[in-house]
Image 1 (cartoon, rainbow, N blue to C red):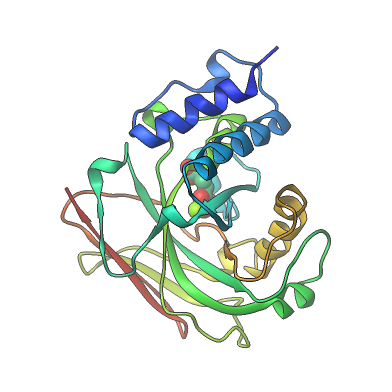
Image 2: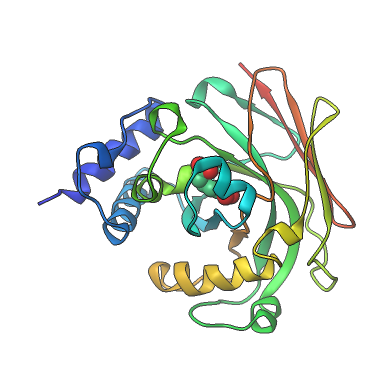
Length: 255
Ligand code: OOG
Ligand code: MG
């Protein structure tokens, strides 16, 4: 029988020490349900070190992301306070294995959400929205994984940065977005790339992540998923994402 706690220790140690590991599915039979259990156990280890659950991230909610990693199912992961990066600050490249960054939209909840909810019900629970970026750093060698591997690895999540919060009572369905590196556009897209309408990602978070975390809570952040393919980060880069009408968010990369 596969020891899910042992696998959780393996992915957690890989993340904690920024060390690449072979895919779990190379040596273990792991279904997606077991992979989520590994994720939950690995996060328990983080909570044991004092980290707090502050939200969830949705993943593979756009075609561009599915194509980049070769997995085509919507996945989710857990966000802790220690993963949050300061807006406009610089992250330390050496704390990661092979970090990539991707432009996202973040929701801030003012009311709990869980289970089957409509888009209107989901939006009624939203306090604010913000331009955001996620730093993903798959713990697997060469950033290669199967569905169960990436789920066990907290869906590659490694950090997130949130820009200024904006009012949610505006049309968010098709906002143009540009991600720039040192002032040069490297990715362009639209929020419509997220499941046709980013609110669908929030609805999916309530349905698939909600029951597993005792409900999405007021005060939590929900990351809707990468709009475009992710950009590999290098020291000296300054990355900025601008979303039409919402605003911008940036981060630098130092040694
Ligand atoms: C998997 C995580 C996907 C997103 O926003 O689509 C994700 C990966 O790309 O490594 O975070
Ligand atoms: Mg992401």
